Image 1: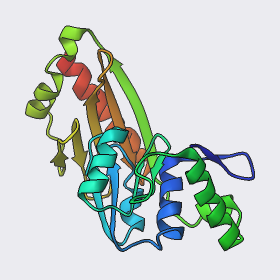
Image 2 (image 1 turned 30 degrees about the vertical axis):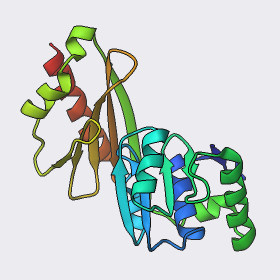
Image 3 (image 1 turned 90 degrees about the vertical axis):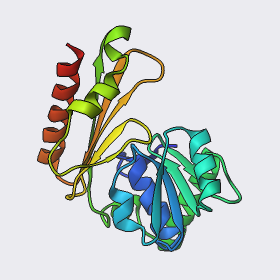
Image 4 (image 1 turned 90 degrees about the horizontal axis):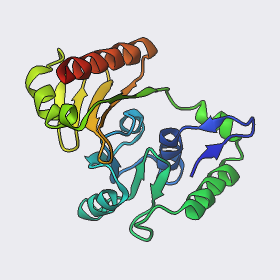
Length: 205
């Protein structure tokens, strides 16, 4: 489900999720489940625990069940409202957003302005099957950005103290590597994206 505000501007999927988190669930407590490629914005809004999981609706549903989550989402516009709705349902998500608008009496653009901004950059590096094979293992061994902690449950996610992260992940359907970046700072987002692209390209050669 993609939401568009009254001015015609699309609302990012991560932004829609934090709107639900604040206005449907009062910002916590409880657990929110979301995949590793979701924005760090949720951790700034949610007062409970944010659990990261493998990318994909089946994995989100499983993680939501295992963690007794009150809400779950994927940045591709899929929203889960457990325990009653353990699947991504566009009609229910639309009804929930209508509920937010009707109870707050606010315009969607005004609600969006209440939240901080995060910049996301998504890029791909295409290679041959041989180049991509075992690439993540080579990246993990050779790429160590300063000040980063590593989450490797699905790809390699390097997390920084300023709230930025860089995720390097192989495609499951074609010989390419995806480089995702999320940061509250535009310049930092570009810096990390370029750093990730260079690391992957260098190790493909």
